Amino acid sequence: MVLWVFGYGSLVWNPGFEYDEKIIGFIKDYRRVFDLACIDHRGTPELPARICTLEKKEESICWGIAYCVRGPQKEKLAMQYLERRECEYDQKTLVSFYNEEDSLNPVLTGVIVFTSTADKANKYYLGPAPVEDMARQIATAHGPFGNNRDYLLLLEKAMSDIGHEDDYVIVLANEVRKELGMVNVAPKDKNLVAPAKLQHSTHVVKSLAKNLLRTFLLPSWCWVAVFLLVYELGQGMIEVANDLTERVEL
Image 1: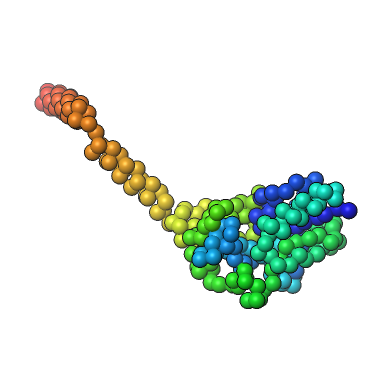
Image 2: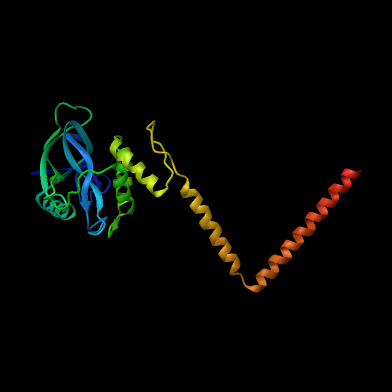
């Protein structure tokens, strides 16, 4: 028996289990959305993170990676690991998996994908929200395994690395950058939100403040050395100025 698992979120860049093969491809009639809460990895019960799940939508496709695990013991260990890690997902769905070479006929069937019930009965289901609200939540949430924004930005990079960027992820990531005051770099020709240059200016202010503090904390003998250095430089500048004046008068 062979186990195939489809990864569309953090599994794309960090599967975390031993596998024998992976294939880049997509599943049909699903799209990636950030409607699920995470309260134990990248968020807390007080401030849950937003992580992606799948939403059924006809004629949509969702790119990701299918991982193959061969051998009863390896399959058992992989599933035990995934069920602990993907505890927010209350469903395991079987899907057909396609690749770029043949978008009509699946290369794999019976591939497991972890999904969630889109219902308030599911305690982890947050539902949709305006992109600005989601960005604000993602920008501030963090938990024992890191912050929420890294999850999103790493997913954005991972999808770019496999050659299949997700427009929804890009828009959300850029809104998070805007929320954090980070400078955006436009991938290809996509229209992004106006970049904020706060990141650079903040860095400069912090650097100046740090250097000024260090200056005030100098011991007295350093102040004497600084005074002498400034005096010598001043005298040198006066001599240069006098020399230039004499040349002009000549």
